[in-house]
Length: 311
Image (cartoon, rainbow, N blue to C red; front, side, top):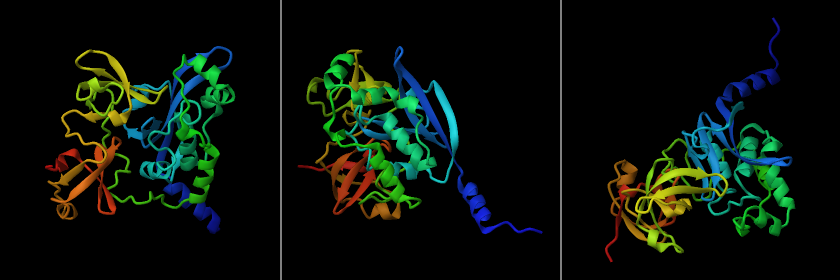
């Protein structure tokens, strides 16, 4: 009998290892008749959604960024890459605070995510409107958005093709984030702190300090500005917040630079950290943990495992 060639065996093995289902979710935002339609898109890996916002990459399993009901949901193929690998590969390129409605938005992320997972690109119709915006003057953009659009200098040098080239160099290697380890919070499949209906506390606002400390409830993710809309309990007003200004209700609140003491860790490795003082670096909403610095290492710890340090 004829034996299969080595090439065909390798091809079969490749298909066999591609066991992660990849889908695209899209929602229409608005249309300019005769010109283009604005879309919000996100990518799903095995049913878990990944999307880019003003506060970086978020992931969940309830299609939060589409209010649970995208206008389109299409299966695109199967990947050898997992959601956790996707998060690690793209996190350095889609940092918190780098979102720009025209130059670096959810569709920029989806384009890169599909390339990493499937070596495919986002269908051009989904990003047609922002390509028009990139050719328009700032004056025209501000007129069209009624003054809402302000260019983000953090996105001034962003080019999707630069990210694509970086992914080509990465190839099939497992992506790593410098200085990160298994406790760093860059993992898929963990509960996100922000989702529709979640109760939160407002923190760290500079221009509306009177809202700090007030309770609110998440209404939805606004895909136009990449922010979270929440109803403030005291007034009933719906305000748009960056993720950095929201914490899960009832959780001890720390700010970057605060000192805290670790306690209550149960694992053998964790118990060695109990009683040690750490520095708060920030809050990781994608995994509902604080990122802390312990010496030269960083860890992601639950708020319940941190105590305030006495002055």
